[in-house]
Length: 599
Image 1 (cartoon, rainbow, N blue to C red):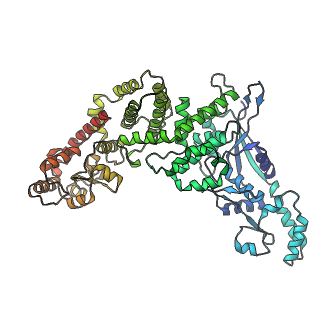
Image 2 (image 1 turned 30 degrees about the vertical axis):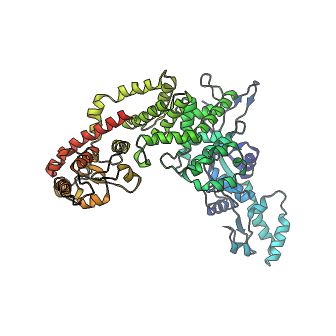
Image 3 (image 1 turned 90 degrees about the vertical axis):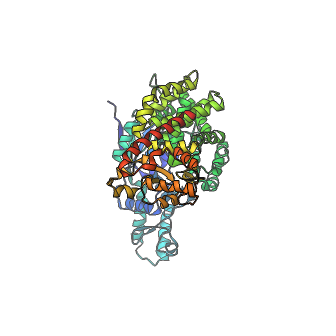
């Protein structure tokens, strides 16, 4: 059995030279430098005192077969220890680091030889001649140490030249301090690498498959990996924080001059919080769309050049994989594609991110949109298929848990179906039978969880149908979802508690919820439905307003229907609460069914 990893010690000087020479590649996995300056200071102090500072973990890329028959030796990729390595290059080599806001910054660590103390440089230290303001000067080649010590002692009236010289020598010997290196074999799969990483990493950080894929992308210089990685990184960052656009443009001038940057700059002006992808989402969509595979572990292998049939690594496969991935990334960030897809999502009634808990549903919806567009399916049919598939996925919890195998299964079938709509209808026939609508869905509406996907589906149906909020004349459910609308109890909570329903799982049933204007809910107070509904009847007769602005009986009955409220509510008190829940669940299920069929 071949060793799974090797453990060695190397001097910091050697490790830094390997990084400069490209023997170890730092992937910049979506992580600017996040240590504060005091951590850099503490690292220098530990090295000076000879304390252990842990290990870095590298994962060796496999050797690949080139087109001419020769072999290319794979690089070592740094998968853990980036912050420490960045801190070392900043403090010892004086290099700028990219901070979380993408600004470049120098971190200067000062040293007090007499007290043998390190501090982050500040104005007070800079004025104190006993402090050496920046230790990086000592690590430049052929630094005149003797002359420095002479000058330092003279300036500060220090007679013990040897003592200062010894401490400066000890400082400079930091470069010979050892750092442990755990080198993982290229033959290890991602799951094993992840497990090793978790067991070794004392901070409990977990790397995802997307992290490893980003590593492979970032360190590849031959097939434009750095620009692909930056395109992914910056697009996702700007989707969340568009205000950082100018910082990125100013601090990464080389990338800002590329066509990649011009293709993503539109996102800075597109304020949309419904679908805000992170780099894992973008990678998953681009990969499944272009490769028809679901496991990001396969992307890592393909970017390494793996031939799954022969288990060899071939440069031609790596080249093709990077080209396809780049195509997928650019199609994801394409302004027309992204905006058109968001329009389709909103046309289902999903108008706020709180209405959909599963990012996987939105991810596959975008995969499906891109696949159908690639096949040349007309826009109307594409919209219908994507809308229905989004809602079907929520109804059946299709992508809950680990979605990878189902992503691959569905992508291949939509890609290969003679008519994509046939696969949709085939799935509907199997998943959305009469039993589902008449029994399963009703039972799933029996829950107190307001974030339930089934309650959200009901709200989506109301939004799609432009329904008015409960007991509102003009205010639509849509308006309250977009604004500050609240979910309130139809049978008021305090009323139920007073009448024996003390358990929150009883009074918080989603069949007891409706979207109601706050002022109407306050006016209802803790009255029984039969009481406040009788007042509504009176309101329709007298035209004197007590609850909202409905003054016509027909309008009141239409409002009840739009909110799936049984007409028996006019005679309901706490003794009929369970009957109400049962009746309303059926009405809610019917609304969801007709909503789905209308998509």
